[in-house]
Length: 388
Image 1 (cartoon, rainbow, N blue to C red):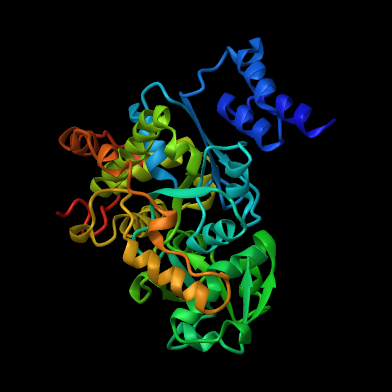
Image 2: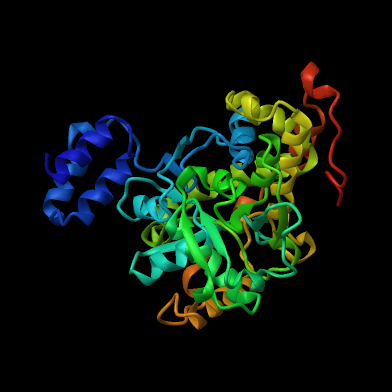
């Protein structure tokens, strides 16, 4: 089967959207006339080009609490009539951004390191919605063996879930004043936490939300938390630049990101309800979190990173260009990027005002009025939830 036939099969099977099919065909070099014929083809008539969004995870799974705003938005109908999917991409670091680049998905969720590497390679992508306002990334260590600083990872062995995650860790180490070339990395795939627990490494990359999940499964580590010291941003929602520049798509992306913003708002005001909604949408999480209070803790770790320093932000999803410039300058300084990029070249706040233009009082009422099930009603809300 050739690549174009595979693209058609993916569309018919529902793995890519109509817009993804057309853009994927263009990426394969299909002529303008052939593309026009494709646009008129009966097979494309079943789906509106501008009313579906396909999102792909960077973690290899969606069975996590991290994406709670999506599940809240689905529960309350915040997406309206948008046909949206949330899918587990391969754990390989650049898989999600490649899927967006080739038209197989519409939104990816990379770290700044992975995203900037894709820009370096010529991918025409842009960050359109900043999820992680604080640095979400942490380093885990065996109990009692955490050093004073991330700089002290020099000479240590750090285990990762993907070799591509070095694009995350190297700038972190450099930001702390360390030399990433003096760190030994081991790619252990999905079992990287177990590798640390078994003494196969000195440290492991982790992130907020995941550390509570690890604790729930008996993986007890000490941590250096990124949000406590780092000036970097974290993962953001990345789309094709051509979509950003296509005026006819502004409405669907604004509505799509607005639904995520509403889910974030709900989550900040009622973490317990948010955790219940997410665990009901993803039943496998009940096996991970036997103690539901730890699940709430995991969700709240993420909620604080997503909110960031709210007094200095211009709403959910807003990019702090100074933070991005700090990251990009650091990545360039260690040779991870061959040229120094500027935040203004690769991030956009074009959709942010519209994404935050919703009835905040209604979302707060939705959160406050949610009827908890018996096994969640006895749980405690985290300190600071809903505080202004």
